[in-house]
Image 1 (cartoon, rainbow, N blue to C red):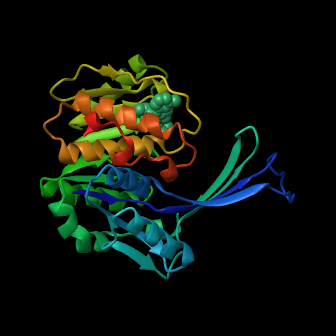
Image 2 (image 1 turned 90 degrees about the vertical axis):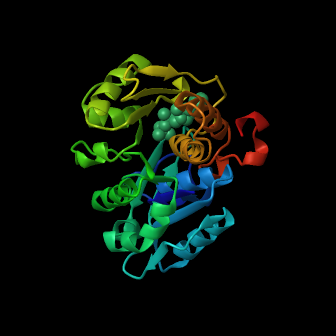
Length: 306
Ligand code: ADP
């Protein structure tokens, strides 16, 4: 199974012809609510490929929280360790997007920041039985670190996605990561190096590898990804096919969720083969608008991926 310790966010999206100025009220032409949060996104993608999944997270005891739990259940995700709190609202992102695709976003992490180490101790049975545990940085770093410790000490493969990135990440995050997977801008923040090409990514990847992760993967959007590991510390570029991207939001989460699925259920495959397949599935997601709504199901994908 795949266990995710991470965030749930409700996206409140308004589409407008232009962004409002300070103090101004304008009319938008469309509003919709979406399910987001990096943790839940990754969990949904893994579940849609057929992984048995569990979401360890915290939402508010409010209507958005109730709706989110329903969304997890509809994706066949176990909510046994999805907590609800009265002390904060469900995490929310207020998003305004104009006709040019420019946006203004305010995120209030809310209940996500109240997921604590005591909750994890309760969920430890589920974490320790999993094949793969994924976490990110949309819950407090102390909580993610504890999740990594529990998984690591129980021999569960850890997939850490340091997003959103913080420059002075605790060194333990690296030594507890079996697989450390980030995008270009996160790699830049973590290493202080510029990352604009596969060659740059290889250089940054070496810096991250030296900090003690077993495997480093840096995703490069339409360029695919770069991988390197303690056993093969020479950076390898895994390109992806050219597709017509219509909405790349959440591509990284589709990639991470897919990789977790392959690590958990297809451990006989080489890492390179898993990454080729993760590139392919994330590329499917960028050809459809929306975040979770763009993530493919196993039944919609070529049979040779499974
Ligand atoms: P993030 O969503 O975190 O910014 P990336 O942009 O690096 O992450 O995308 C993650 C993965 O999604 C890439 O490694 C690639 O496999 C796929 N992907 C993203 N954008 C495209 C694109 N335009 N064409 C094809 N694949 C893409």
